Amino acid sequence: METTSANVSATVATPDVTARPAWAGRVDGIGPAHRRWHSAVNADDATTPGAAVIGFRSDEGVRRNGGRQGAADGPGEIRRALASKALDAGIVVHDAGDVMVVGDDLEDGHDRLAAAVSSLVRAGHTPLVLGGGHETAYGSYQGLANSGALDGRRLGILNLDAHFDLREASRATSGTPFRQIAGLEADRGAPFTYAVVGISEPSNTAALFDAANALNVVYRTDEECQERHLSDVLAFVAHFVDSVDVLHLSIDLDVLPAASAPGVSAPASVGVPPTVIVEICKVVAASPKLTLVDVVELNPAYDIDYRTAGLAARLVHTLTVGSHRARSRATAPTGPDAVAAG
Image 1 (tube, rainbow, N blue to C red):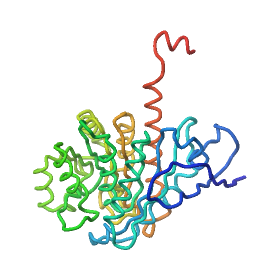
Image 2 (spheres, rainbow, N blue to C red):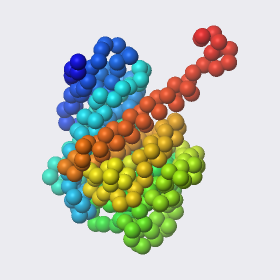
Image 3 (cartoon, helix red, strand yellow):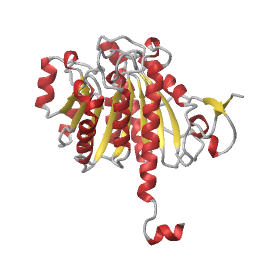
């Protein structure tokens, strides 16, 4: 029989966040064989490094960009979709709560998100930032930069997205985050190393393609990312990961086809198939360079049968499990030590 359980254990401490949500979901039994996200979140000591979920409840960037609002409710829906997913024993997951943008003060929200992300990175956690609009990425990046993790190291940003989000504007919007980041990377004397998978040519103006070329952005269009091109796409991603020291993965759910992800601000007419996005996430998760993840633009008001929320949760799950398994393999004893351990 299905029952529910809420986890109220001690949680990761971060500044400027709201109360941590309770996680609840299906319970089939007791013990690691029945482990699910809702029973694993915050079950470990807060100082134990792990994946740390943090929400950015913001619609302001989408509003400023002229999109349809509702993404502020995305973090809660992704958590609900994650809650009953099975989770390997040994995977440490924390919930660091939500940063909420109050009124139209996106800039203050960015500052508070940056403080929270910086605190998590310094504590050894991998932040999983759930948006919110794609303005989320700018606050996430600021937190990573402020943490010291980029000192003397080359950052690479891999964006799975139908849009470049390189717009110029007098204020931050959901269309400006990577243009803003390019400026801050220049300020720290670092190259802007940015790749996009899933670009929709009709959804990006000539000015945006010009901006991408001027900033040496590498990209693949949605047509170049269909399943028949999977090996080429994965090679593109692997080459990019190899070229950097620290990896920031940003996933805008509008990279997916509208039939698979209707609950976004700007549904895609073509998009990149979910199976391709999942395989990209596996490649990224296998790298110890992965330091920060954003999953953004879920708009529950326009979702159908929780399709978009379910896919978002699947991607977060894939990244969390894949990263844990890769690290476990990397630290497993080999040779004589493995024999002794066995």
